[in-house]
Image (cartoon, rainbow, N blue to C red; front, top):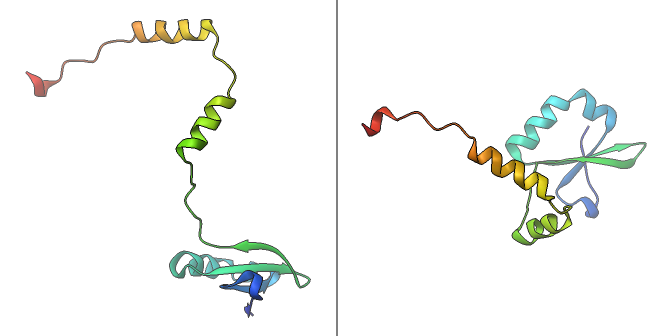
Length: 98
């Protein structure tokens, strides 16, 4: 049986882990097609939440932070990359450009 959630889980319904397990497929459908959110509890204590997945947000500053955190590239690696570029096989001639 699904119950209404308290204010800290606005828009969510609470249900026991047992109830969630028994109706998992239906819960997934409700999450996917209705956008509903459920708080799963065990022994009356919230232990997890089932909700629609949100897209990952990765900004330009996040990318800069990531790139700055990487170890420096050594000269041998750059030589290998340049060698790979120089020795790439050419593309076959396109029949559309004849």
